[in-house]
Picture 1 (cartoon, rainbow, N blue to C red):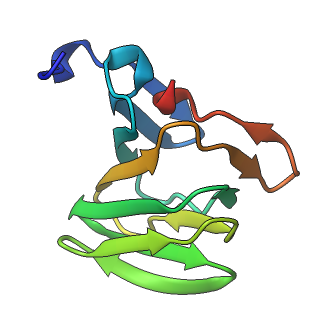
Picture 2 (spheres, rainbow, N blue to C red; picture 1 turned 30 degrees about the horizontal axis):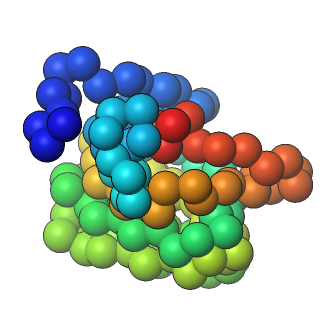
Length: 124
């Protein structure tokens, strides 16, 4: 299916962060998963890693990208490239939501800070 309707996209919430699944195997993608992420104001980074490279593009707002324990300010138009196996989290100390588009290879696994490994819900 070459066009995937955003109106019917599945939505998942983890803490104060909302994930809207756009492209994934269950929605017709074979190689790349894409989702929209909304990080609510006042959110602290929830660190995790992936076994594959993740790329995020800030669409609106500003926030903090924590990579390997170092905080980096990010704002609209910035891209964040997270290497495989690097601990990463997004925070939003501002008053407006932080919106991003995220791309990850199909089949990537997430490792949470407690060591649990999961398939991201938006990538199914």
